[in-house]
Length: 153
Image 1 (cartoon, rainbow, N blue to C red):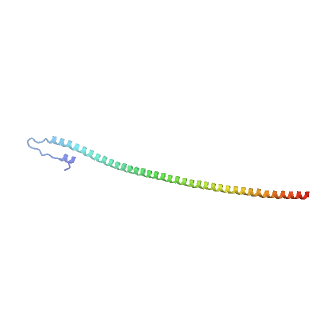
Image 2 (cartoon, rainbow, N blue to C red; image 1 turned 90 degrees about the vertical axis):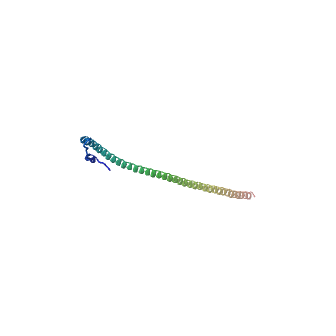
Image 3 (tube, rainbow, N blue to C red; image 1 turned 90 degrees about the horizontal axis):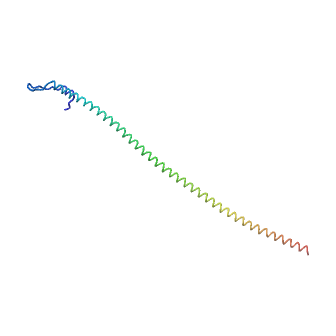
């Protein structure tokens, strides 16, 4: 059974005829006990209220901690995704640069082959020109020689 300060204050003791309790002493004691119980009851209520407030604050802090943990995990995932995307983009840029470099080299090699072919064609034309020119010179010399013989004769 729960005893309240009011229960203590209203408690009545039956006195004995001989050697009974002094009612004033009992009342004084009961008043002191009631006051102490009232103080303890208030303190207990205050402590319960403080515990409830601390529990609510702890729940808020736990929620913040969960939110921070979730945010940190999300930031870590975003960071990993950004690194992965940067690597992929760098690989793509490198691959494109390699393709362009290969195309430039292939174009240069094709141009070199074309220039070598053109050079050979020019050399062939030079040889043909020299041969034709010699033939013409020989023909001219023969005509001059024939004309000089004809004139001497």
